[in-house]
Image (cartoon, rainbow, N blue to C red):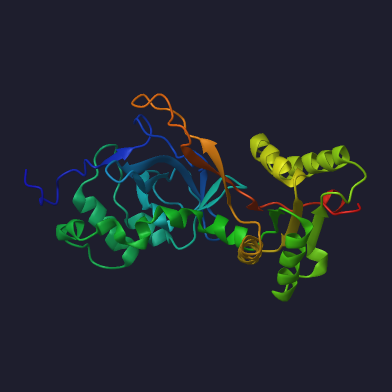
Length: 309
């Protein structure tokens, strides 16, 4: 069968279930999640995901329309991944722009039987155009936003854009910390949203270490990251900025980095390899010491890190 035959099966698409692939770390597995319409109508659930093995990108979700509230026939259909959004707080997939008429017009999906003709029909339905020719597959067919899997997370990104964040920067001394604070104020940040904790302003070194450990332990879920910042801060000063959006947080972090809380590079003896098991005398690599971070978390007033408190 010729490659341009519109009835050839799209063997490049596989179901995630039963494959040798899995969802990337840190991303939710939406299989089994309820699917709802723009006004909250129950449309069914995600029964499977179809991905392109060559690009390792999800192209479609399989929507099981069983007992949907639009009274459509109970069957499985394919929804281009870029048309969906996820609500991770409710374990729901939302189809904000999909209509009952479009779902009714979609061809049935059966496992391992997706032809080029089927894909072109689906694309035509959601683009309100006639099905495109098979030549489109040679012209970046999946380049359309309907197949952009990052759009699946746009609701989460929009939420993050207006979510309180905490920005921290660790400085070598109080002078550089105060210089950064002045620049933050010049950039429009209010005194009430900026904290500074300087080594030597607490009663004892152990008290300071305990406060740092408690503060960073609350801020970070990762124990190693909390320990990393606690160790750095014990030798210097910490500036904390409380922000209301990711955009504001990025401005604050740039200021902190520009005025002294930049990445440090500490020399470390190079580790030997199988080819050269013994490191040459004096050879070095550099271990980056990250001194700033944006955390999507708000710190309670009682736990804020401030000198003299």
